[in-house]
Amino acid sequence: MESTELRVELLDPHDLAPHPRNIRADLGDLAGLTESIREQGVIEPLTVVPINGTGFQLIAGHRRAAAAIAAGLDAVPCVVRADLAVDSDDSPGVAEHIGAMLAENLQREGLTAMEEARGVAQMLDLGMPVAKVARRTGLGQKRVKKAAGVARLDPESAAEVDAQQLDLESAAVIALFADDPEARGRLLHAAERGPGQLAHAVEQIKRQRKADAQLQARAAELRAAGRVVVEDFAPAGARLTRLNDADGTWLADREAEHLSCPGAAVHLATTSWEDRLHEEEICTDWKANGHVDRWASSTASGSPKPETEEEKKAARAERREVIENNKAMAAANAVRRTWIREFLARRSAPKEVLRFAVEELAANPRIFERWLTGMPAAGDGDAATEQLGLVKPGRTWGDPAQSLTSGEQVPDARLPLQLLAHVAGAIESSMAKDSWRGDVGMLKDRARWLRFLVAQGYTLSDVEQLVVDGASE
Image (cartoon, rainbow, N blue to C red; front, side, top):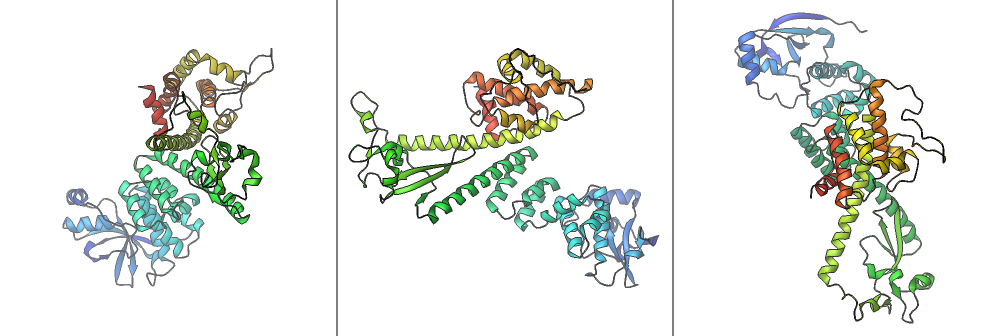
């Protein structure tokens, strides 16, 4: 360990120079601190460093120094760190000053996320390695790296982080999307509503990015092959599966021949029901190219009248809403199951767990039978089981089902969580991307589960709130 030269002196606060790299952006309201110092004096010494052999510069205690001046004091106790003296403000040794500032203020929990981030970034910029910054500040290396990322936020986003008083963990998540202004804005808006909403927004953005990357990669392949690609909404009437040629031949059976049509194109979209790209052949101007709507005959006498433009517009809007809500629910399912997995890893169960698990087993025997016997689920099934970190029970015909503990020696305090794991497996396996809608009975079952999770600390996404609201109608 490096030796230090420390001494305590009474110094005039008027003579203490502020540090040019003070990590605090604002000293804040000093009224309360000033009154306290006026009554009791400065209880905790300031930390200073000698400068040029003629004076002292503050390292830690800028607020105390300012409050002491406001209180009329002419002497305050100071710890003089001669070991930290440097020749210039750009000396690598200044990183030690910042480290001391961070160490003291982090122990006092007095820094904002951005102040912590700027302090770490300055130390790194002055050439101090990450490992040494971690030692000097008492932060782990992972937190140092996160802080460095947060420091790169643009001024507007940094100001928003400060305004919302976000912690470093939330700010670091936002910093991961520093290159995407739209995503960054969405995350800041979500973070304003709490860490739980931020987690949902991150998952949605990640899924959308993955889908967009798949779509763009496939679009590039098709365009390189000379195809016309349509990425926006394609009217249903443009699909070859809905069109006949002038001679009455179904175009879906003549895709290869249709490639020579001036309107031949490929429509690409991310489906709302699967995590994959949907690709279909269309004709961008089917009427002009002599094609016929093969369903047109359905509008004959006794059949429904053709939709008006307003009805078509409403139908498209409804379809888009379904697609967006399905995507949001898929993201929410992943976030929720990650949260449940962590909840189930607790050493002991909150008192509400056992009662809820027993009541659910009695209220929904069918879905638990499917789960415990390994039958296919109507929802996400194996995906949900994997996301929850569970091993799905199963049996061959006539053999007994696995025990709740699967033969493991589980402490009594964790038994309610073992039971809840099976409840979670059964319920989550029955939920899918479209579980935000359904009949009232289904919504009530799902809402009961979601309300229980909320009571344990989980934050609902907007689409999950639709389930709870729909169950109350």
